[in-house]
Length: 114
Image 1 (cartoon, one colour):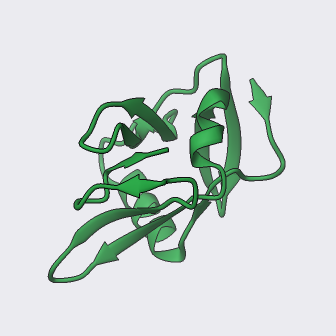
Image 2 (tube, rainbow, N blue to C red):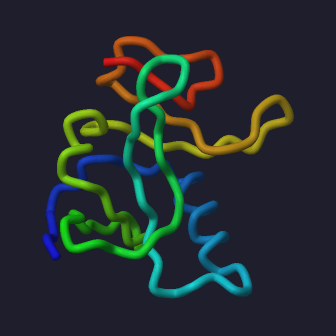
C-alpha cells in the first residue's frame, strides 16, 4: 500500500457530502474506498471511473476530508489537478468532472480526450 501526502484530485464540498451520504447508506461495505480512475472508451476516447471498491496492492491511497480515495498511479497523468463536483439541480444531477488535462470532452461530461 502506497500513501501519498499530496492529493492528485480534489472533491468539492458537495461531492464530499454526497460520497459520505452514500457511505452511510445501510448495507455499505465499510472496507470499500472511493475509486477514481479512467478507462479507454466513451465518445471522446477516455471514460472516468468513480465508484466504491476495495483497495488493491498497486493503488495509491489518499484521504480527502475523511473520504478514503484509491487510484492507480498510472491514472494520475490523466487526472492530476481534476476536481470532482456534485450537482443536485433540476436539469442535471450527479458527479461532474472538471479536468484541466482534457483537450476535449463529450456533451454528457463522462468522457474526455487528451
